[in-house]
Image 1 (spheres, rainbow, N blue to C red):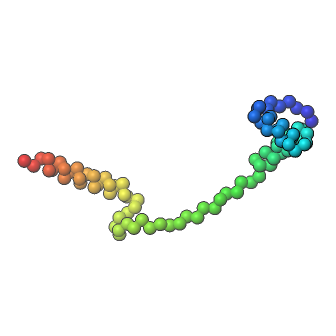
Image 2 (cartoon, helix red, strand yellow):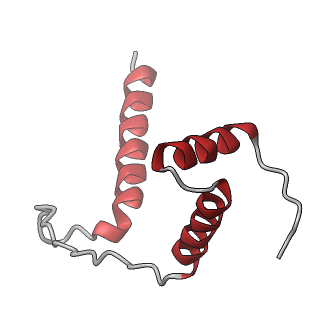
Amino acid sequence: MRTTLTIDEDIMEKLKESAHRRGVPFKRVVNEALRSGIVFETRPREIASVEVVPFSLGLKSGIDPDRLNQLADDLEAESYAESLAKSERP
């Protein structure tokens, strides 16, 4: 089947070089490249398995890791209150 394609210059150079190096017709190199690309796109992708390794944060009992932001806010408020009290002293 005949069709007209516009091929980028860098790809055209590589196709021509491949045809020349292998001593095969340009048409064959183009068809092989297209075939290879289509097979690559349509094959199922392998999903790498991920192993999750638990790691202890070493938190003391009573500290909820989901509330660490609240703890930081409380400590900051406490520090601010202390600094405010110190600045009000004569």
